[in-house]
Length: 86
Ligand SMILES: [Ca+2]
Image (tube, rainbow, N blue to C red; front, side, top):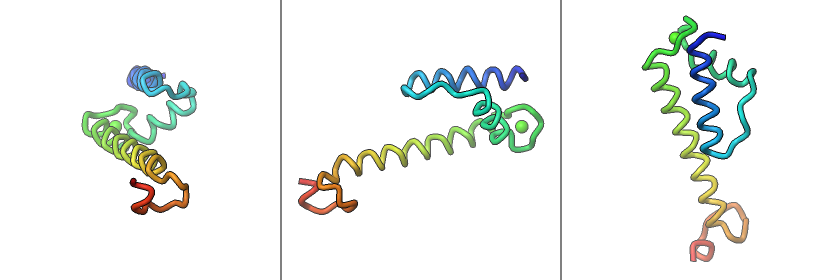
């Protein structure tokens, strides 16, 4: 395993622990790394990392929005109305 990939895995494991998620498997680490390594040089540049973080945070925001929606949608009809917000 490349040293950058190793660092990447440590970072993923740190995040997984912080967010209470299951530890990433070897396969997930390699897939994730390959996905982030856009020019396929086996290294993550600061720009590639930044793009990845942006995408990750974007997804986190969407997950939070979903969770918030579920919280507000008390009658679980899939839409928010004044009664749900109340
Ligand atoms: Ca790269």
